[in-house]
Length: 411
Image 1 (tube, rainbow, N blue to C red):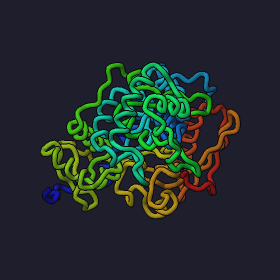
Image 2: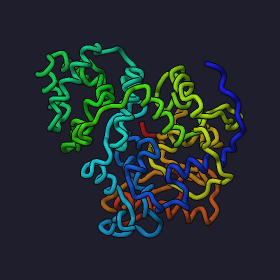
Image 3: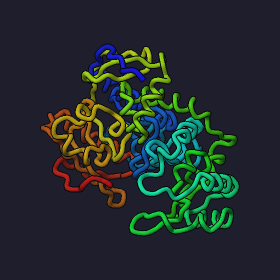
């Protein structure tokens, strides 16, 4: 691997504006051609489901028809007819139309992904193997045991939706008592052995999430979401995923790509090298990066105001962090250097505050803590964004305030 060529200099404002547009976050693009939930999820490389309601909000706020104004009666919402999008549009795409699938994506964490892209994601993440999806701690399963679990799941989940406990019982019966050994440390308790490989099994296409049964998580087969589904060949899938990433987040370094996937940096460098002339060198803030070949930047400035929820893909995946989270934002809106643990206020494409909301029946209480003085026009735009959040969350009334927020970061 040779050194990355320097390439021409790209300006932060142009790079940031392009990312905002591709993430459906530019105000000028709100409500224009964004009614396809799966297309929106694909544009951001999936919505992180650390908090399901936040993932639903991330997508709903990007859907066509979502605009400012007073929160209407939620029963009038209909994105497909030019109304205001809300989280029901996301749920419909996930659980009824099955255009989205809830499964393990980047960093071995749960995401909402376009069902049509599941072969790509499974092919690429399975190629990474245990580098993504098992976390810290001792290895609890052999390769042969993982193979046995995958084969059993293909039969067990073919036409069923099972909770974790139900699935544990079925796996013990299918492969042996070792699958249910309570040896995986979790939340001051112990989970059955098979759960150590849950993400790996999802990456292999052996399971995905089904609708919860009450408060219990349930699983099913991806074949029920996409009949005939097969993961793509690993090397080709990895290269295609890297192209997806660079379209959404480029220019980027191999180290940033590795961080986004929770993958080894040398592996990411090799992936970039394998793309050859499909990518080209540029500099961003003096740092050598890569972007898709011919992906020219317009000379434009980020505009508008946005409220992004917990773990929004734009905040989590965009770099350099010191430019996206300038000044006080690096301290107030990051948690030990990690993005996503606070909902953030974006002003002209940069983090300018944090926010928090709380529901009381159909009433939404939403507070915004700016990190600098907001001009009157910006303050009005922030309140309009709060109204959009209320609509997306199906609230019929909004209590909005500007002021300090004492709630800490999400774990």
